[in-house]
Image (cartoon, rainbow, N blue to C red; front, side, top):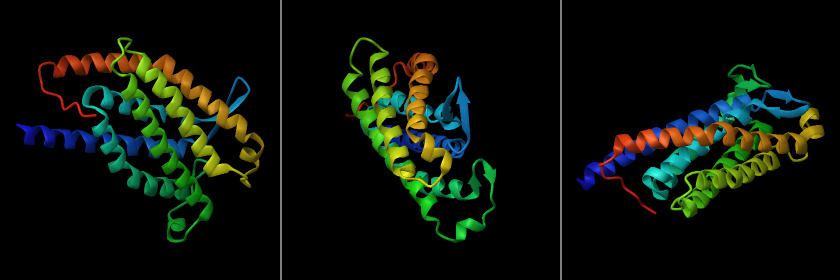
Length: 218
């Protein structure tokens, strides 16, 4: 039985790691497309990346922090490579072809490294905060606190590493604004959509798995 549980746990980790990489890939494309809402500048990536925190929080709640850290280990290298590739073949949301993949681009590598660093650091902080608070009776406290801390670390790491002293005229002028609005959007979106979605998914998955042994590992 322990072997079967371990195999099932690894399958879940691989599936969720694939989900993480998919979200990172879409977010790295969408972060190239700026939007303006009520006069504030941000990118479409602010609407997709919080899905990773939702997946991580549910993983920690249902299976423990160890599995969540395993998912990051599985996803981080593919995330780095895919981040670089997407930033090469797409520029400002437009298809640039695959020719750029055969020569090294320092600017794109910096964005990919920023995405990689932000993902790893942000997810580790999210797991740490959520795991500390998940036993509290208020179901919303752990995901809300983890979203605030995780997104803050992730956003600052990404924009700081990727675009500090950038030559891009738009980001050079609006970097602090874009990063601040990006973070604010993530928090608002998390509060309005992801917290309720977290509760719905948690209740359904818990009901479905009720009575089955879950590997709660710290």
